[in-house]
Length: 359
Image (cartoon, rainbow, N blue to C red; front, side):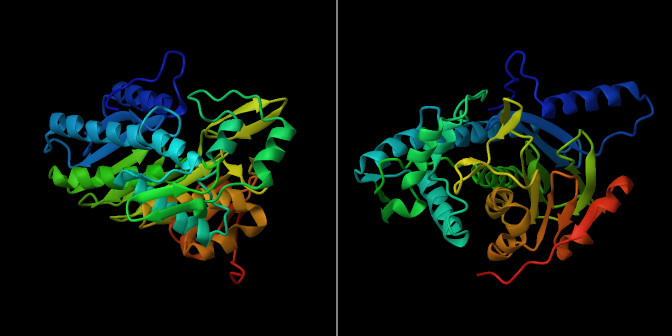
């Protein structure tokens, strides 16, 4: 949704950082002239920041109009709780009646079924009712957590992506509790579509960044894209990574959507095995050339936890990943170690993780 401001009293961390950056540039009279243009939109419950290189050569008004319309369309198509095509599809899937699904939802279902199979059900977008039970099907989640008996009922025989039968464009649900929530992969598809639209508008070098999850296209003439990786327990960065063209960097963390309840942090990454917010990691970052896989893999590693995340990275074909543990330790795959430049104070907390043979 183009240029939609945050709701009153809801200035999120991304907006605060953007405002601080603007103020800092304004205060520095000697700051160099930026070599990029930036546009900011609001979609998928977050700020979508678009960086265009070089500055001053693009039709920004046209890009703002057409990309903003595309983001708004995707937001409406894939929103898990606002009225729209996904909501109507969920109603029909729960009723068990066959229906023709829109192509935009079919693509997400196909990828979700593939990813659920690869992860043995650890990544499962069919659990929308479980996510809603925790209060995350609203703009401002606040609890309370579901009662133990509610969790027990939802976990007794939970739905799977495999409970969706498909015959061409026709779908039929085989589980009354099946409700799709594509929060773990829709942003990946959205940033890819955003870059495709920019290319159609004549842009050759850009980043589309949806709340810290991003993908690149092209690169500046005399430098690489350098992206900071956030420390989940502070407003600082752990380090930075250089990205080439066509690379996606996605992070899932317990600091994103959530609320405090009786002294415990309840976040939106729900472990389908326990029915509760995943524990063991505070964040997981994945670098890959497939943004949908990167998006889903970051969520999967968060759920897998401290012991199993390297095994699931291997199952998903992810070679470039790093995670943070509650004690501040940073674990990373050997392949990403040479790509990340860490802050000096972080280096003593880094260790390399080797994957066990995938079962």
